[in-house]
Image 1: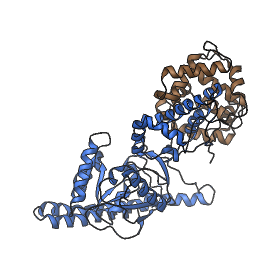
Image 2 (image 1 turned 135 degrees about the horizontal axis):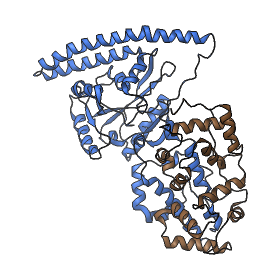
Image 3 (image 1 turned 90 degrees about the vertical axis):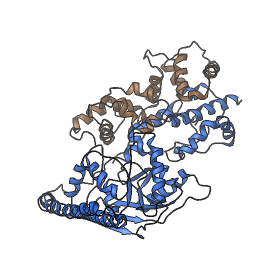
Image 4 (image 1 turned 90 degrees about the horizontal axis):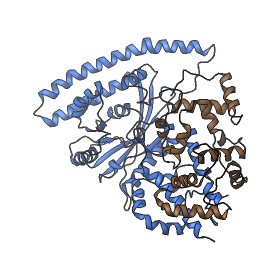
Length: 388
Length: 175
């Protein structure tokens, strides 16, 4: 069976020939880990023997890959809200479910709204005076604002009847460290924030969320970025570095996936957090879907709708693991470091890894991947032309 | 997740199954429908090129543009018929016919030298020079008993590709 695409391990001969095309391929290696290691491969057989017409006309491997991607692909799977099995389908359970709906919407929801409102009143009545009156006493003000932010986050979590189990040592305020976590929804931040007042790096959102970001989150020391601006990356990288140097700054929390994923998979981590030259403390978050699916599918729901959905469910149950801090190993590139940490988090939270960049939600893959395939095929053709 | 309001009835499933010559089971057709709705995000009844290209695995495929031309504007029934060549139940003949259709862009039943060159170009990109591509293609054609000006028809393809070594199968994930 002759396959034209050489997946997986390449022969030493090919590697030798590859050195002629080194300039483009070394760029490829630095940018990403080898996607081919993740993607399903057909039989990995080196084609050999003299090149004949059949080999050029037989495009079935490429077509099969394309059809495979059309039928199911590992990227779209990451953003699919997988609904739990409906259990209310018979005559006994359905009325029970209806009663549950009534309780949730007419009893729990109003109670929760009250809790949240009370929380906001307390928060604002403490925060506003502290913020303006203690303008001169920065250290004290910072400490109080930290406690207040943790307080309002606790109120938020209470408003969804959040049952969060924290495992591992609590984060400490030290310089030269960042925290990274997998991302399922913006509530990840709130759940982590109620335990420790992190500084966060986030995309600036419109609406009331944006207002909260520019006022309250500013006080814990947050950094804003804009996905669509290319130059933004350098500015953000610089601000990240400045932040971790400061001993007084709140510990920085980064979500290296860059986008919300459905809590069954992890997409590739952006290397920005891993090339700051500091300790990286991984945090793994796993939601229990029996109670509610906490995945925020930003394509389908606004954040307000998402919160309302959470407030009308029974509970948000999740586990948070604070894992062992990691450092860059000698000889390890930031990309490898990022992958290693992603592995640690994925294993702990029971998530599957996929080799895609989360930003592919918003843009097309780079032509480098296609070129790599073309290169492999071209080399195979040229090599076999020489064979007798 | 897509257009959950339009459900498939048993009649619809049977009609689609008929149209694809029973190459897919009913469960597979339901699974394909869920996938179709997932890809057809704005629910217009067919998947636009943009929506296909939002699948990164498809976008990096060298033949994606060619396939997009064949996939344009297909409704669900035609979409399943398109994929039928990749079913394990499809005959070797159907698979070879599909490959022929990919080559024969103008649909006149004949594949010329430049059609084969076009596909070779898609597959090799900038890594072989145009001249070298022509040389390689001419050489293998002559060795197979054709020449640069020959037209290949369906039966030629069947002769060249038609031994049982052809593997072109995709599994439809059924819940």
